[in-house]
Length: 175
Image (cartoon, rainbow, N blue to C red):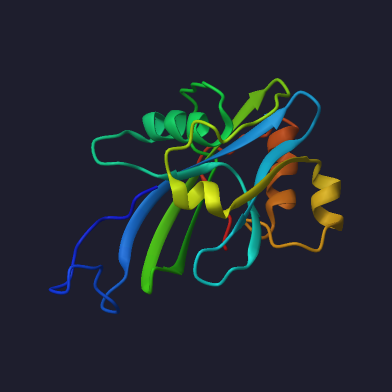
């Protein structure tokens, strides 16, 4: 999930300044066992553990669906395709490498058979270092867990999707 690259006169990324804008895709992989696949990752700058759906930045020249297919492959080892439209979106700002990144995440819902995910196809060393584990969650387990989830109210927004209620337009799911 490389960021847009610019460099300072010292050869490294510039610090401060206006936020880098980034667009990303996320896969809500809903298993036939009624569970969503989430990855526990440690955030690079704050070192806080969060649970989030597989996904990442859209590379230059990629469509959302191409990026989604690549990210699912890299982060789970599954080759999945979809022509479905997005179901959610959110915008958030975070720090990476001392810079502010404003990212728009677009979420896609895919029904899948249960599988054992793997990171062995992920070429990003930073991600393989920061990703801690995979877990298939029920919405009930997410509601009971004390961790940080992305988005924060993921269980609330997942329940209608799992029941077959796909929104006509992507919903803003907040942080």
